[in-house]
Image 1: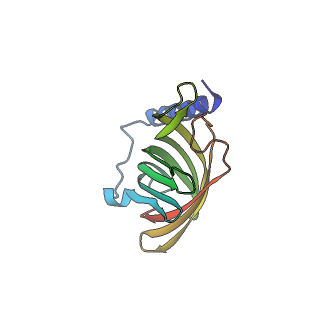
Image 2 (image 1 turned 180 degrees about the vertical axis):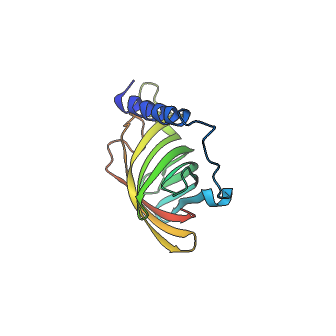
Image 3 (image 1 turned 90 degrees about the vertical axis):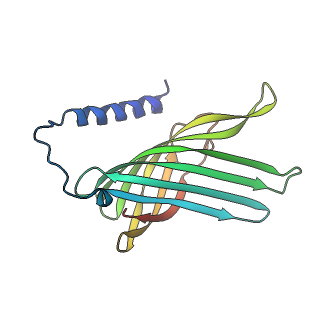
Length: 185
């Protein structure tokens, strides 16, 4: 098992052990309605021309604590890429899901850890064929969030892919920089 995979497994195990230690008889019921514990976000990317790029990444998170500092969530991911500078044009697409945890030490800053599992096209050198496979990614980083009034906010984040699977779409890439809009985040 690679070191980042071992670290991710240990992190998830510690989190589940910590939750298992909470006595159920003294746990207070969260008085907030479910709608106040959920947040929605994600991103949409569009670029058209010689190089076309489309991405759609909806997310939903759940605030674990009443101060809205710690949240867990899930999301979907789809991307399409086409480069017409080649003959024939190079095209690729991928889809998958993500599981993540965010912690906000102060209202404007957050830390982010994510497991992203993408199904993408890969080239097999031995068989000289293109096929699809599920590729694991572990993204770690953080970001900045700014309220736009009400429950809406914009965010900017920087993540690094630490697993570096040989088939990773982020292999040997620098930071992954993204921005988006959140509702309730």
